[in-house]
Image (cartoon, rainbow, N blue to C red; front, side):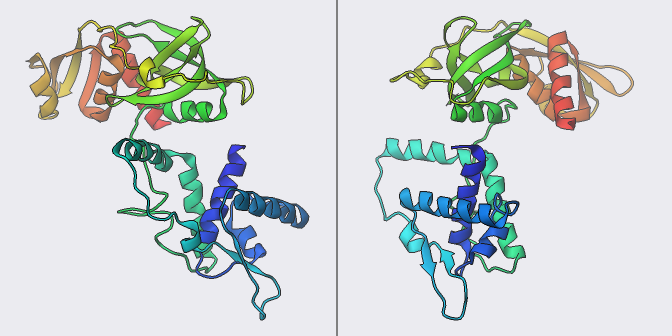
Length: 320
C-alpha cells in the first residue's frame, strides 16, 4: 500500500472516530486530506473503495440515514472500534510499547492532526481524546532519535527499498559510500542502527545511524528488498563494537559559559578576547559534534578537522 493511500485511510478513520455526529460524504471529502482534489466521480469511487477496505480489515463504519437529510451520514462508533480489555505478558507489552513509540515521529502524525484541524475549522464538533494530547491519546506516540538519517531509513525499510549513503567507520576519518538492502532499524543501548545486506561487502552488516553523513538516497523501486526468513536483527547489532581509539579535541569556550564542559575537560587554558581553550577526550566524532552543536555560539571546535567539519555540518543542517 502506498504512503499516500495509507495516510488517506488513517485520516478517514480519525475523521469518523472524532466526529460527534454522522458526516455526509461531501463533508468527509473536504475534511480528509487526499479527497479534496478529486472530481466528483473519482471521489465517489475512491471513497467506496476506502470504506470497503476498512470494513474488510475489521473497522466498522456505520451508515446513518436521517429522514431530514438527503444524504446518509457516516461515522465509527468508538465502542465498536476499540479493543476489549486484554492482558499482555511483560515481553509482549514491551514490544507493543516500542512499536507504538514510532507514531508521533512518523509523518502520519502530522497528517492526522491536519484532519482534526479541518474538522474543527468546518464547525464539526470532535472528540478531543482522539488524536492525543498531553497525557495520552491513541495516536500520540513517539520515538526519541536525533539522527537525521532515521526518517529516510525508516521509510526505506517500510517500502523495502535499497538505500545509498556515506558512512564513517568507528574511530576513522574516512567516509565511504555504502549501498544497503535495509532489513530493519534497531535501537540498542540508546543508539540506533540500520541492519541489512551490504551490497559492497556482499554480507549482512549493521550501521550506526550517527555515523551516516549527508543525505540518504533511495535506489530502484519499492518492493525490491526481501528480508530473509528468520533473520535476527537484534543479534546483528548485539555484538560488541571494535573499541574506537581515544582522541583529544581542542575547543574554544566563551569565558563564563559552559561550566559542564569545563568540568569534563582534561585541561582548560586561559585564552584571550573573551575565550578559553579546553581539551576534551572523545571516541565518537558524531556524538562529540552533537554535543558541541547543542552549545551554539558558546563553543568552537578548533581541531581535529573531522570533528570541526562534523559540527559545521550539523549547524548547517539546523539552519536549512
